[in-house]
Length: 388
Figure 1 (tube, one colour):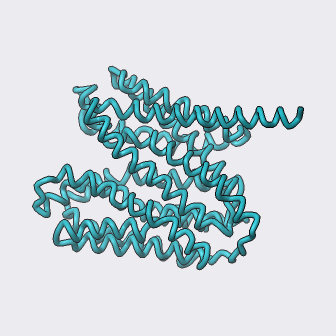
Figure 2: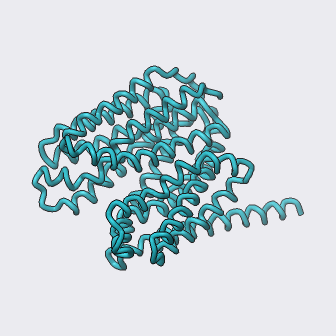
Figure 3: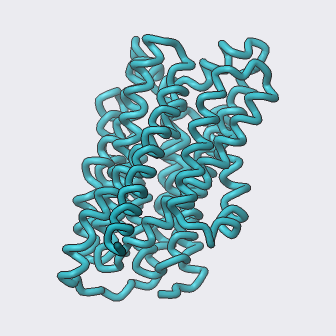
């Protein structure tokens, strides 16, 4: 499968447009709650932050199966239009209840990341699919970096809820791009693939969920950690340090993909997890801005290499006839990993301070590394016994 570059570019651009609001607005939830007159803005904001992710985790596998049945283009159109509808509902919300409903709808009928990946898996395959998935992850990282900055600036002119109404135009534009794309030919399911995929996919789901857990665990309390560790650091500097690993991903993804293309993905994942654990363990001890910058850069490189290795594994198990099922479950697993990280980080930060989530993420990365090494050792022993 060799889709034109324009098709891949349209999917990536459409996802960036949709993710811009979905990832950029949550930091401003406390402002929205104040508009409603809520007295517990911080508490409710935390729950609202994870609500769409939980809904995506629940609904993605079901949407993925429908995509395999009715076509990935139709389901991607559904995701973009559903996102637009949820943004419009949020924009016209007249109370907390309606706003909560809009966020739940965003998760239940959105899911553009999984739907986009499923469409891509029907038009590209193999190494090109792996590179494309890495590019899609870059789209999410770019949204995570740029959206809060640009939307925060726009709020000098528009109220947050009013901004939601304008942001609904972005997924509508993305839906138009998808509508113009070709409909991939239907691929009949075959019994061998159906029987072969689940065990490999289950292992991949666990791998992705734990990897996401380890990278996300520090997100909720990073700004608080920087302000406590480096009192001289401004809020702007803390925000820059937060986004630094994502910036590294954007800069390093393409060259690292070329550099690591001949390296077995198990080695790539192993090295990435070791570097990730080291960077997470070292950041709480960084006593200067320069030291923290260095460890954040290493974290970004480790995160980038980890996703490259992960995407190589995904491409290896992906089948066009099961693309919806595969990427629906993968998105669900990633969301559950992120939700678990947020909940666990809240518990350990409350008990041991804002530096604790770093050790939590590092421990998860080390546990995953140990599991991968154990699996590899078991396979090597089995191979040796088979030869003997």
